[in-house]
Length: 402
Image (cartoon, rainbow, N blue to C red):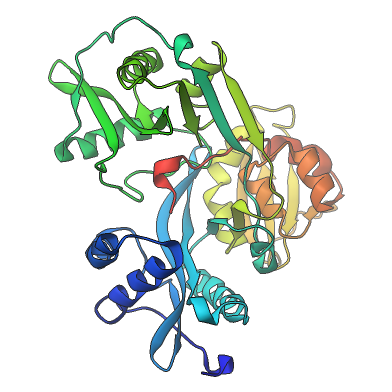
């Protein structure tokens, strides 16, 4: 086969589901049972067949760029996000530039499908070529089991059942309201696996909290939870001692979640990992659509600040788009640059490269983002950026990853 014969197409469920799962199995080492049942699972998930891309050569699927459709929180706002997963190339076709061509075409297909942003968890030193930048700092919480509460749970627990999933999703959404980077459930609803320890605790006939955990290498690993953090830690402490775990670990726990705050008030170790290109990465697909969905959140931030009375226009430009934020009487609106009436006041502007996505997400303190990304200011932009785009400590938690 010649590599220039690669044909990029959208996958079709009936024609390509088995081939996609077979390719993923070959690339990621899935067991054959997972490969066999994968097509049925894929059709039930939030996998977007219209926004994904596969590469064909002589009718065979040799590359895959998968898109998972979910809503991501940015403060009180929600933006439609394309989670990129299952990125793979047939073994003997690797290192021939096929994935670079698939990714370039895939990003454009996803943009045309109406997504605001796109996120992925990728290998090092590859995805920056396609406009992706670091999304957040990965964190790992570690606690010695002896430091977990010894008091018994305040409520009796029972095994989580399938009928509990919708209630648990609602509990999760309430507990993560306003936490940037988290997914609005149901996102990628993963069934409870055979190795998962999943418990709920009811009160007055309703589920009030839950924990999903697993054991690995003598450690109790936190997967997901919602409810009172003290009750969660009591349940985890009992589980850890029952399983004779040496440590408790929580990876990809949102740093502003109630459980993370409770852990930091006790005895724990927190490891921060920074990766410039790789791991969690983000990219804008439609700057205008993203900022329009953020106007309510931006207005609220403005009203709480010393610039609540500021009036004028703020231009925001990334490598692909220019959007004007119009600000008056504490309210923010967004238009494509060049549309609508100009205020007559000298325009303030934030101009940058792909790192503008980090500002929108609140990856780090805005001054740090702007310095690292060489973002340029004019007018009052330097004052406004601190108010409109503060650090949000974003995180997509582990069970919603793709």
